[in-house]
Length: 256
Ligand code: IPE
Ligand code: IPE
Ligand code: MG
Image (cartoon, rainbow, N blue to C red; front, side):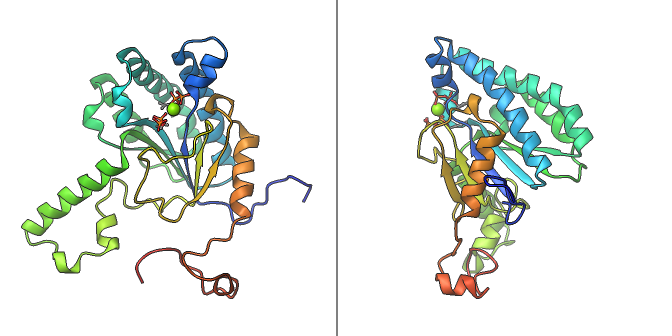
């Protein structure tokens, strides 16, 4: 393997990305923040292709947080517009590649036109078998956990769930996309080292890679660097190195 080349072994099955730094990218160039969001769409397109080309099954992109609703109206409106344009322009490529578009978040807060564009994209790609591209939209990790708890309380009231038997597996089955495996690798761009309410439950054992690269500059080589960093880690899931080396560490995290 040439130096610096990406090994196809131990690729993460699921990568989640906090796409941060659009506003600062624009400000550094004397541009309005919204120009940074527009430039960020190009990074989305490239990274979606790379993940698919590398054969990874799940990519979750943090596109709009529940807290982002507090941004100025002009910025929120532009982010929704860009999402609609992205979806309408990229459904065809998703179909050709057989990628399934999915969303997670409190979608009832989206403007009608955005919601319609999302529903169209999700519906028309729902049977595609070659990987999931998931957008976290109007998403907050705490909100997701509260929504799961609300469903569980209702189920318990109906006698469908016994509180004494509630375990992590049953709880996780009430999250937004219960069939999606936890992210193996969490990437955050934009020179920040925080979670910002993203996938709080699911990242319990994710490997975390942060980079100073602003999202609009994030390209294939940066993704490959993140994957190489991931491949260099030993995932111990609470066990010892010796246990992992002898194969006892197979199987991942969770209640045992
Ligand atoms: C990420 O970039 C995009 C969204 C949060 C929607 P930001 O807009 O947060 O950019 P910075 O962090 O202000 O540079
Ligand atoms: C996180 O970025 C949300 C998204 C990338 C959609 P923010 O820019 O909103 O995060 P904070 O406010 O810096 O924590
Ligand atoms: Mg930011």
